Length: 217
Image 1 (cartoon, rainbow, N blue to C red):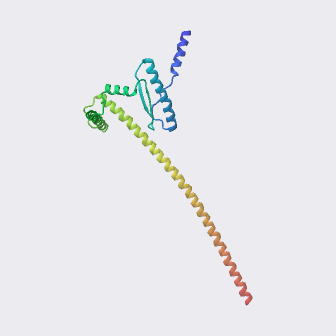
Image 2: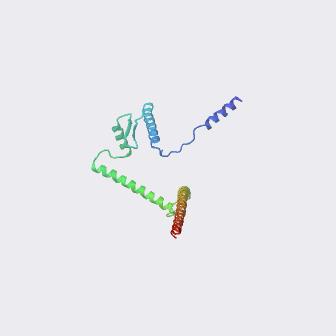
Image 3: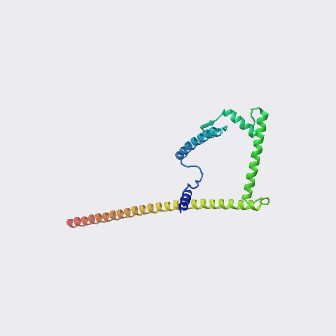
């Protein structure tokens, strides 16, 4: 019985672990800077620990969004970078021929990347589908379905925002119309009152004339 409850508690502990956190750009600048500082320090610490614990040659370069550089090197940084360039086949010197070969290779890689992207664009447009296998077609279909749903979601959000804007404008026009109507009614009341006063003054003047004429007679 004790073993049963112990396993059950262990399972609960496993289930209570942290869920997956979606990795995406932090929009708030302050939060982004705080996160950068914390994770940068953690990364530098891990690089140091790796070099000490495993006797590894570690070189780490970090550039902040503002362009400030941070680095750690367990050995000479230039030496480690030179070793890296040798391992991946990058030129070590500034010799024109070496640089020309390097940039030629870079251009070829870029051409291949552009061709691949253009092919993907044609596939998304429903063109040049013959070379694709069933698996690739299914993957393309899923990607397009996700893209279409995102487009629809964006469209719905824009339409909703536009409707809310129109509602606010309509409410503002109604309020303005009510204000103008109220002002117009006030002006009408003033005009009627003024007209009545004028009529009353005119009648009084006529009565006085009649009285004067009677006295003269």
